Image 1 (cartoon, helix red, strand yellow):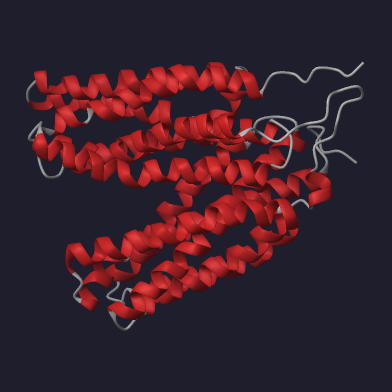
Image 2 (cartoon, rainbow, N blue to C red):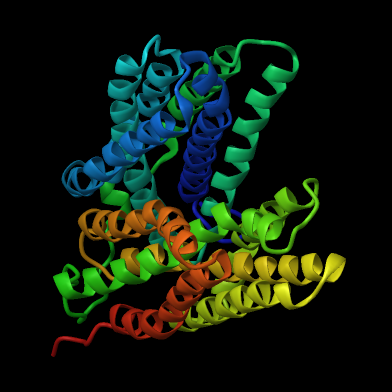
Length: 402
């Protein structure tokens, strides 16, 4: 039985299940991020110690990612996703309710481990569902993560506005996410349902080689470092370089984020019309143009400078929106077990997201912020130049066996 669009109901259910995991993952991360100021105040952490806590979360995440890929290949992404979702929700209670820095440090690592497990497993399930679905659907999953993040932040902000202790809305978010994970889990596809079908006479799919994984990882690293730099430094650039009003500077991040989320939600329609190499080349080129426009805004003055900068960051958001979905989908479509390859590519990319903002900050300290932002602009150019050739190789049709 097929739906009106010719899609089996089990695939529609699986797609909704993956949407659920992305939204709920974003919900937890959004509530965690929004509650950090209150956590810092409650435990009297200070910026340096809070930075250490965030580093511990990232460390746990990076440690878990390679393991998650192997577990997905061994037990299926469905199993790992169903287990790691509720675990991540429960693990967030540790840092949220921690009574001291010592407990917080341990809880941060454990939370990071569950984040890494879920990040990889749900992305593996997403590319496997897309592969069976037969058309691009992965970009919207990443857009729904951003919507979940906004919802998580709104829950915490709403609770604080009502005068509640920050731990109360966080616990509410955890309970809602845990229940949602349990409800969405049965909808996911099993290993047998996501196994790639071999065409008659086609050569068997082989796992991606180490060099190709490193190249794809480098492209992911460049894309995510560029994204992280824009997220953390666009508003600072508006405030410090353009001398924007305190009410306008924060909106610079907002316009970037809205542009990225919007394109991710509707980007699959573009992916149906263009091949992955063309999309990645176009995405990198648009991002370079966006950064160039944003950095040229200092040549203007007043409102014109802000307008030019916002136009540049909107372009950057539009370009960066499709980089990760296209890369991850290409890895899934390459054939062979997706868990190990995707976990390695995403782990390398995640390093770029982590170190990018700090690296830009150190370069800005040594030179200027405008000069430092040339680095992510250059890495966007790397995405445009190195990404398409790599995707042409892994998306090349299999040679028939005679």
